[in-house]
Structure formats: C-alpha cells, structure tokens
Amino acid sequence: MNDSTMPAMLGPCVGMVALTALVWVKLYVDRLGEMRRKHVDPQSLASASVKAEVLQKTAASDNFRNLFEVPVLFYVLCVAVTATGTATPALVTAGWAYVALRALHSLIHVTYNRVVHRFAAYAASTLLLFGMWVAFVLGFAGA
Image (cartoon, rainbow, N blue to C red; front, side):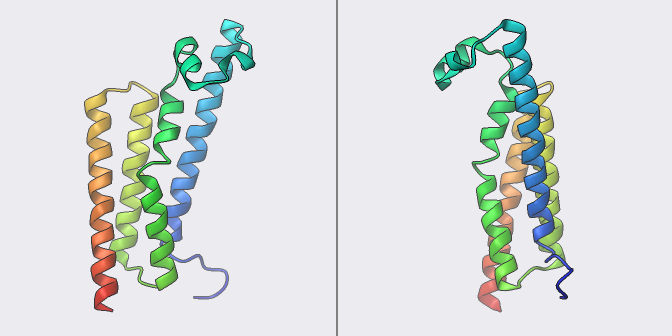
C-alpha cells in the first residue's frame, strides 16, 4: 500500500461518518425549522424531557442518537481490521453492506418511520455486524 491509498476497511468507516453527518444536518434543518415556526426560545429546550414535549419532529434526532449506539462496534471493528492488516474482500464488502443497511434504517427513520421496516434494517445490520466480528476474530485467531 502506498501513502495515497486508503486502507480498504476505512472506506466503509468513512461511509458511516458521512451518513452520520447527513443525519446531523437533517436533525438541525428539522429542529431549527420547527423552532422558528413555533417561535421557540432555544433556552426553553435545555433538557431532553422539555424538548420531547415541545418538538414534534424528533425522528432525525432519535436516529442521530441511534448512530452512536451499535455503530460504535462497527467503528472499532474498522480500526481493528485496519490496524491488524486483516481486511479481506468479503469483510470489506460486508462493511459496505452494513453501511447500506444503516443508511436504509436512517432513511426509513427520518421519512415515513414504519417501525417494522426500520427494525428489519436495524436487525439485519446488527446481525451482519456481529457476523463480521466473528469473521474477524476467527480470521485473526487463524492468522
């Protein structure tokens, strides 16, 4: 690998960061727009409980928080695979599939928010991630 080539497993990692950034933008477009329409003083939203009472458009905020739960395990896996040099084409492909499933989960969450659809994407992405961890551990142990 030369200095201008990004390690393969960092691609999906950057993809997750980009997804998180997009949801963050959506969160503030929704929140600031609703605050402006309702003439809400920002200081009046100083706690999460008050925010939940005052604001109705919270899907992007909920999804943004969700992107810091299970995906943390994905970020750690990306760093571990990169640090140990154990990336395989299958693992990198699975990484991109994970990002795609999380993007689908986020899209459902911030648009029509059908829970059964959102849960299917969430469950599939989480099971895939756990499978990636198993593959990494078994591959690393066998190396």
